[in-house]
View 1 (spheres, rainbow, N blue to C red):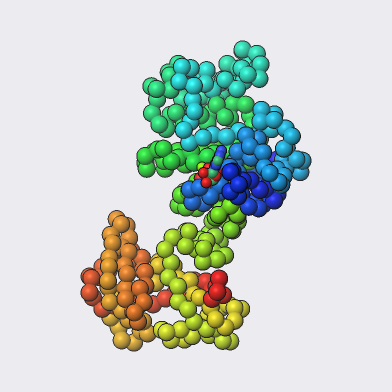
View 2 (view 1 turned 90 degrees about the vertical axis):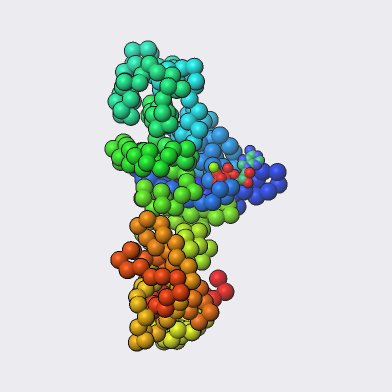
Length: 343
Ligand SMILES: Nc1ncnc2c1ncn2[C@@H]1O[C@H](COP(=O)(O)OP(=O)(O)O)[C@@H](O)[C@H]1O
Ligand SMILES: [Mg+2]
């Protein structure tokens, strides 16, 4: 078993609190993501787990035991950084074997392990090349092979895909996911890219402003964000204020039966993809006029003006509406999340 626990971790730089009270745990063999905007403290958290930084307060436990006094090399956690940080003057195989050499592994055993790693990341043909002779994706795979060569218990990946172009990013994402599942290595991935987090994680910890705002499996996170702050971080949303009484939501568009225990003044969060758009139909309660449309290839993003509100709507391309056109809208009320109004 190999579990990680982060407990009440605090960290400041220059008197500015960067990590305010970080708590989360990772189960054995799990791949979790720390997702948050740039500057929220993700890398700092990883460095504390790896042992490159000390927290001011709090603890990091591996299998229930504090590792704060265990030096980086003995902790069993390894970080792969976005910039790969390969040694430019060393061949691929020497880069991969570097940690093993430092650990004084005998030469023949080292060669065997390096060969295994080269196979694992499918770079056997590049073993004698220098980093400069490799593509971005290949460099990344060398960095991962070098990290895995020392057989760490914990793999920490800091924005590993950010420097890759979109297509390569997809390939490397699936590659790392498969590798992680195969090796069952406990992994923490850091990213600011929500699609990436949703795609690859067993669980996602959303980090906002030095705290973990929500820690959930991807679908639960996306479908039922715990607060408007988390909801907004995951993408543009619609909010309609109103009142709930006895399971009925009353707002400027009428009254709707809803499933929630919330009472009185609420704010309904409606995802743009949960608004259905259709040609004007006077039988439907919500009518409006198309103010803006943006084409994104597989979707159309609209803004509809209705009762002086802007309603965002994302649709497939089955029917396309024009700017100025009058339309009717349906809201999928069972997908709506209600927050207390003052949240
Ligand atoms: N060594 C350091 N010295 C001073 N400030 C730092 C240091 N490392 C990080 N910071 C600051 O801490 C905040 C969080 O940084 P970081 O953990 O790198 O964020 P993220 O990885 O989420 O983008 C940023 O405001 C950054 O400028
Ligand atoms: Mg960072």
